Length: 345
Image 1 (cartoon, rainbow, N blue to C red):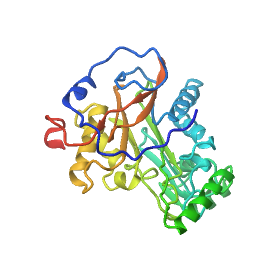
Image 2: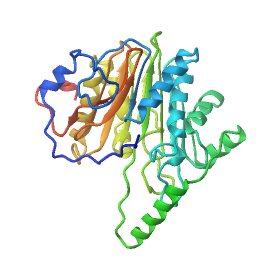
Image 3: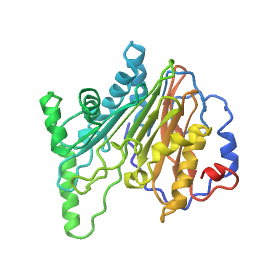
């Protein structure tokens, strides 16, 4: 399947109305197809439940469930699910098949979080290693730290004999060379990019999450977005729920976006409402308003799930015992009509 690329979302779409917000709390008829496109999703499912960003998250969801059902831990399951996305060299957004930084080398970011014990691990700007999510887990489990970056993270990974790979794939290197030529001619435009954020709710009520990306295409070397930032690209609270983000990382990390989604759920919002409320909160503060390219996924302890994005929204993937499919989130372009969030916005 050809991997979708994000169109940076414009502001010409109609604003989300109170109708879809009310519909998000109803349980519509189940789709008969596991293929994407449905705008109204089941908002609650019996765990194990997995939710992730983008259609390429669907195989990762399926892998997560397969690993969990085999008797492995929830942490093993989310790690292996994200590793599947990282291993796909045809994906220009995750893993070593991703678009390189401006110096022609892919720099990877990832994090992992365990609800039990509220543990987290993270790596950023890692070059030449195939599975940054696994390095992030080892940081969590073997060090007193949460985050390692750049050469330090690479030294840590090399000492533990993690799988190494190419600095950049031949196809991406050729694209980078063309970009450099266009830049010199002052006609360059940075390509779009995506992220996989993945969350698992187990039957025991525990929540685990992981996130991985190759970051903004042709970024300044050393740039780190929201994906490896705990509370930015990913956040899990085992008493409430979890959330993950994809989009322009700078627009997420300035507002601790995923943390804010979880806090809105703590106040009693459903995951869908919490994603929407977070977008409205950010847009009310940011000078760009809703022209932000931010998307969130979320699930809670009750097995409810949801997503929302600026502009036309985005596609996300959900899997449980009954189905595995791609869904379309609501999109927002202006301040909501009605009391969504009330004073909490």
